[in-house]
Image 1 (tube, helix red, strand yellow):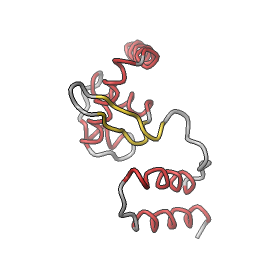
Image 2 (cartoon, one colour):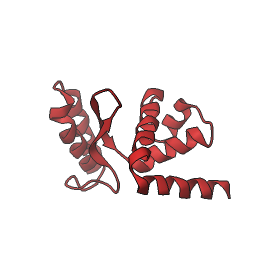
Image 3 (cartoon, one colour):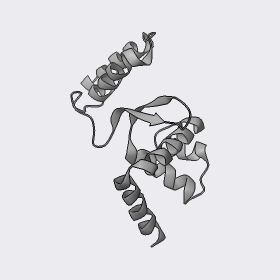
Image 4 (cartoon, helix red, strand yellow):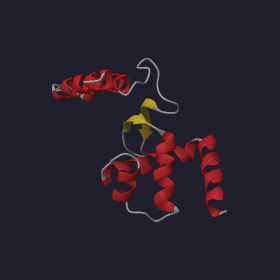
Length: 131
C-alpha cells in the first residue's frame, strides 16, 4: 500500500466514525481529506472558504460548507448558459447530487447580488463563452 493509499484508508476510517454535528467536525474532515490528497492540510486550495454565510430575505442565515466559487461558477454557467440538467452538472464537477448542484447555483446567485468582483468574473466568462 502506498503512502497516499494509506492516507485515504485512514481518512475513510476516520469518516466512518463521525457521529457529531458538522460544526464540530467539518474542518477536521476537510483537513484530513486535503492531507490524504497530498495537499497541504494547513492551507486551503486556491479559492474556497470553509464556511460562507448565506443570508435569505425574511429568513435566517444559513452556512455553506467549503464554498468553492470557481466550481459554483461552472455549475451556474452550465445551467444558465448551457441548459444542462442538475444531475449532469453535479457529476461533471466531482459527483454532486442534483440537490447539491442546485444549492450551489442558488448560493452563487445570492453572492452575485453583493459581490461585484464575482459579477465581473461571471460577465467575463459569459463573453468568452459567446465567442
